[in-house]
Image 1 (tube, rainbow, N blue to C red):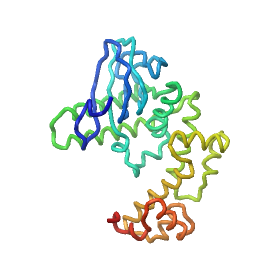
Image 2: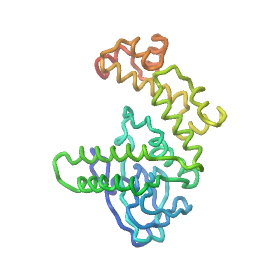
Image 3: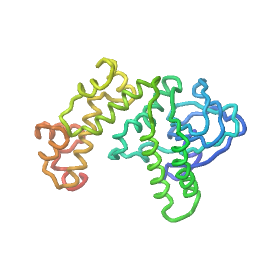
Image 4: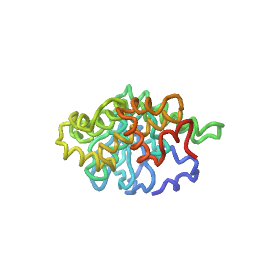
Length: 283
């Protein structure tokens, strides 16, 4: 399936719907979008690449690209689907990336579901579900309305939902790999301005350096070293565009002790010198 099957608005690649399933839902995959699923009532067998697990009210999970899934044996089963493209919903500079639960729920669970069994999901308590349900209702109502500003409203609500769910997410014991990698990525997002190294990141886990780097690189498509550098360069670019700090001050605030080294690395990653970034994006 493609997102265009549900919405043709390329300026707003997001779709919200409530749906009830009285019969088996056929197996299908996603080509260009992720799907945040919240079970509103009842239960069903969730089939992910031929592995089955029973899901029920309060279960929340994310289905990523390339994952084949469907539902069987529904019993009063009703869900909320929020379909989105990650780069639209989560921009690189958002501080949601400082939450381990964000990495676990929205980035790592979808990846591991495509390479391993569907292992875990967020299970909302009754109190947490009571907090989430009104936001889902408002998002669905706004999405299907013609109110001015509806897109801004829907996007703000979905992002609010993502933050709340990320804060609530806790990795089960059987998802140790997800927990370790999520913690490492969040630690780098939180501590990029400190004089930390990848060795400091790896020491927080219980894995050998070789095994951790292999797991992290497979999940994120880059080594931990490159991830940390990307975080630092991303924040440095934002500080330089703000134009209130010198290049040396930006370097120090982004974890670089040598401004000359910072300038070389910044050019390597962006194609521009730090001075060219001052005051705005390069032309």
